[in-house]
Length: 260
Image (cartoon, rainbow, N blue to C red; front, top):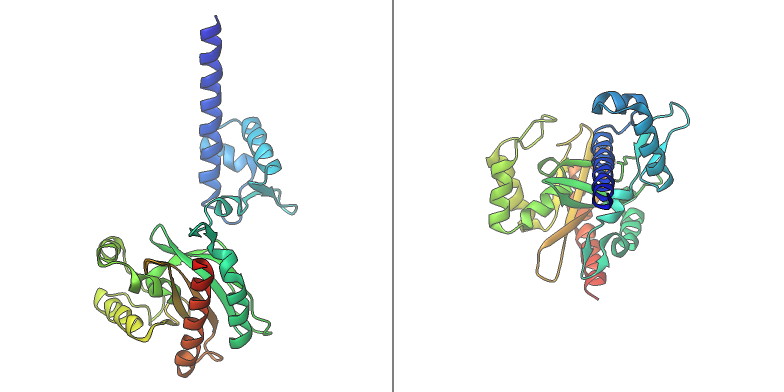
């Protein structure tokens, strides 16, 4: 009798865990969120079960429910659990002062990025004070090959890791300037190594330029990148070298804090 009760309890717990994870994974595909009925329909779950699970997740900070359309949206709680640590220090915290200083020196939005699951993940940003500005969304992922921080990281990867990435990635053209061939991408990564900074000449989005420098750990491994992003009319190609040097200085500041 006791054994049977334990088995039933364990099965119920396992089923609840699977449903909770399924909801998390499902909502991860929808930035604008989904309603309880939409979640239930997509996952073939009872609406009251979805309501109970989402309510618990909402109370614990994993989801929030928008007031306007009552849709559930993932919070940054998952990202907070996986914030990169270097030498037991938060990369985000170590980078904040440098992000703000770089923003003030360039007048443009600055971002901290890492490579995650083959893409460039925005961890933090310091938004420009300009009336016309460019900003992203923390948690956003973009292809590494079409953005400056991604290319800065790729350029410093160990040869074996870079080869693995190049074998797996599918190069797509987002603008006329996207480096959508292996030859053009490898050529740009070589230039990035030689200059010390990466550039994005409207390769991901039309009218937006970006300059970045890689952040290295004590083993010279690329743990992230700091980048400046702005409208092309205020960040013309002629300014890339100037901004690149400031980005390199900022990356070194972050590395120093990480290694202290």
